[in-house]
Length: 102
Image (cartoon, rainbow, N blue to C red; front, side):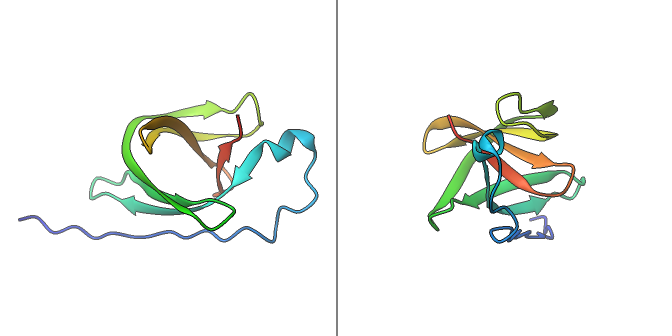
Protein backbone atom coordinates (compact mmCIF):
# COMPACT_ATOMS: atom_id res chain seq x y z
CA UNK A 1 0.00 0.00 0.00
CA UNK A 2 1.38 3.37 -0.98
CA UNK A 3 1.61 6.07 1.60
CA UNK A 4 0.96 9.65 0.73
CA UNK A 5 1.50 12.84 2.57
CA UNK A 6 -1.54 15.03 2.77
CA UNK A 7 -1.18 18.73 3.27
CA UNK A 8 -4.38 20.34 4.40
CA UNK A 9 -5.01 23.97 3.74
CA UNK A 10 -7.47 25.98 5.71
CA UNK A 11 -7.88 29.52 4.55
CA UNK A 12 -9.66 31.79 7.00
CA UNK A 13 -10.58 34.93 5.15
CA UNK A 14 -13.90 35.78 6.78
CA UNK A 15 -12.66 39.07 8.25
CA UNK A 16 -11.07 40.33 5.03
CA UNK A 17 -14.07 40.67 2.75
CA UNK A 18 -16.53 43.07 4.38
CA UNK A 19 -18.10 45.77 2.21
CA UNK A 20 -17.55 44.28 -1.24
CA UNK A 21 -19.43 45.74 -4.22
CA UNK A 22 -22.45 44.03 -5.84
CA UNK A 23 -20.41 42.02 -8.34
CA UNK A 24 -18.16 40.77 -5.59
CA UNK A 25 -21.19 39.78 -3.48
CA UNK A 26 -21.94 36.93 -5.89
CA UNK A 27 -18.53 35.59 -4.91
CA UNK A 28 -18.52 33.69 -1.63
CA UNK A 29 -15.08 33.07 -0.17
CA UNK A 30 -14.87 29.75 1.64
CA UNK A 31 -12.48 27.75 3.78
CA UNK A 32 -11.23 24.71 1.86
CA UNK A 33 -9.72 21.43 2.97
CA UNK A 34 -7.41 20.36 0.12
CA UNK A 35 -4.79 17.73 -0.60
CA UNK A 36 -1.52 17.91 -2.48
CA UNK A 37 -1.06 14.63 -4.35
CA UNK A 38 2.33 13.00 -4.75
CA UNK A 39 2.51 14.33 -8.31
CA UNK A 40 1.99 17.91 -7.08
CA UNK A 41 -1.68 18.47 -7.91
CA UNK A 42 -3.86 20.46 -5.50
CA UNK A 43 -7.25 18.79 -5.01
CA UNK A 44 -10.06 20.24 -2.87
CA UNK A 45 -11.75 17.68 -0.60
CA UNK A 46 -14.36 19.81 1.19
CA UNK A 47 -15.31 23.41 1.83
CA UNK A 48 -17.04 25.28 4.63
CA UNK A 49 -19.94 27.55 3.72
CA UNK A 50 -20.33 30.93 5.41
CA UNK A 51 -22.90 29.45 7.86
CA UNK A 52 -20.32 26.90 9.06
CA UNK A 53 -21.75 23.88 7.20
CA UNK A 54 -19.06 21.68 5.64
CA UNK A 55 -19.71 20.23 2.18
CA UNK A 56 -17.80 17.16 1.06
CA UNK A 57 -16.62 17.09 -2.55
CA UNK A 58 -17.50 13.67 -3.93
CA UNK A 59 -15.53 14.07 -7.14
CA UNK A 60 -13.48 16.60 -9.10
CA UNK A 61 -14.42 16.17 -12.76
CA UNK A 62 -12.36 18.95 -14.36
CA UNK A 63 -9.50 21.30 -13.49
CA UNK A 64 -8.61 24.24 -15.73
CA UNK A 65 -7.48 27.83 -15.65
CA UNK A 66 -10.56 29.99 -16.11
CA UNK A 67 -12.22 33.28 -15.28
CA UNK A 68 -15.47 33.60 -13.41
CA UNK A 69 -17.44 35.82 -15.79
CA UNK A 70 -20.33 36.23 -13.36
CA UNK A 71 -18.37 37.16 -10.23
CA UNK A 72 -15.03 38.29 -11.59
CA UNK A 73 -11.72 36.74 -10.72
CA UNK A 74 -9.25 34.46 -12.46
CA UNK A 75 -7.60 31.29 -11.27
CA UNK A 76 -7.97 27.55 -11.31
CA UNK A 77 -11.58 26.38 -11.72
CA UNK A 78 -12.41 23.03 -10.18
CA UNK A 79 -15.60 21.46 -11.47
CA UNK A 80 -16.82 19.41 -8.53
CA UNK A 81 -19.69 17.12 -7.61
CA UNK A 82 -21.16 18.28 -4.28
CA UNK A 83 -24.32 16.63 -2.93
CA UNK A 84 -24.87 15.11 -6.36
CA UNK A 85 -24.79 18.51 -8.10
CA UNK A 86 -22.11 20.02 -10.31
CA UNK A 87 -20.46 23.10 -8.76
CA UNK A 88 -17.50 25.30 -9.57
CA UNK A 89 -14.89 26.07 -6.95
CA UNK A 90 -12.22 28.64 -7.86
CA UNK A 91 -8.70 28.95 -6.49
CA UNK A 92 -7.66 32.53 -7.28
CA UNK A 93 -4.17 33.73 -8.03
CA UNK A 94 -4.22 35.48 -4.62
CA UNK A 95 -4.50 32.03 -2.93
CA UNK A 96 -8.16 32.44 -1.92
CA UNK A 97 -10.97 29.98 -2.68
CA UNK A 98 -14.48 31.03 -3.72
CA UNK A 99 -17.76 29.75 -5.13
CA UNK A 100 -20.24 31.81 -7.15
CA UNK A 101 -23.84 32.30 -6.05
CA UNK A 102 -26.30 31.37 -8.80
